[in-house]
Every structure is written in structure tokens, then in C-alpha cells.
View 1 (cartoon, rainbow, N blue to C red):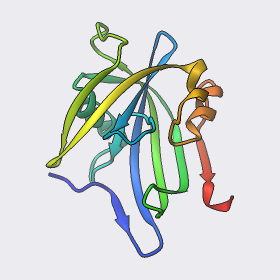
View 2 (spheres, rainbow, N blue to C red; view 1 turned 60 degrees about the vertical axis):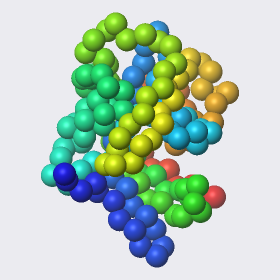
View 3 (cartoon, rainbow, N blue to C red; view 1 turned 120 degrees about the vertical axis):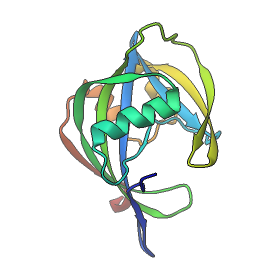
Length: 163
């Protein structure tokens, strides 16, 4: 098993992540992990020695239990924020537009339990109409901006710590 790329210091936690955007019938697939109360994109940590393309396919396959393919590289985001544990975070995340290899996937809500390196995580998946994203607590918060820009971006920096 390879190590995920993340570090902790007294001042910051660092994460190197990937996320996949799956859109079907103008709806975006989002997930609530362990009843967190907010929705995010499926994805996870890049492991040492793994490309971001390998990581996003692996993570989505682990979480959704469906084979996926990359349709398009969207960009990379540097994000600085305070997490739910009141810790300063520095995150670099690569974003990809993805699709299911099997197009018979239903666009209904579903729940799965992921075994993530020995930790069981409840994943509640929800299809949210892109026009209704403003009605939900979606994180990271800049995701709504990416969607409103028609998924056109290359490199963005969001620093919530400067507010």
C-alpha cells in the first residue's frame, strides 16, 4: 500500500487531492461523507508514485464502485481554508471531468460504505441539478464558481484565510 500525499505541521495541514466531476442530465454527482452535513465531489488523496489521472480513476472506482474514464482535464486549484477541526489547510487538487464506462448508471440517490485503508466511511451520493447548486452547502465553496464558468479553468487560487 502506498502512502497518501499529505503532511501536518503545527501551522498547516497539506493535502494533495484529486476530484472527479460527473455530470448526467445537467446533474452533478456529489457526496455527503459520514453525514458531514455538506456535499463535495467524489475523489481523494493522490498516493506517492501515482499520477493524478491514476488517482482520480482509483478513488472514484473505490467510492462509487463503477469503472470511470477521464473525459477532460479541467485544471488545478490551490486552496487555503480552515477545516472543520479549525485547522489551517493548504490543498492542491486536480479536477477532471469524468464519465461512467457503463452508461446504465441511474441518476438516483444511493449510499455505499467504503473501506478506506481500514476506516469505514458512509457515502451518501446525490445528483444535484447544476442550476440548484446554490441551494446546497457544497464544498469546496469555489466549486460553484467553476461550474458557473462552464468548467473552463486551468489554474485557480482560492485563499479563504485572507478574508
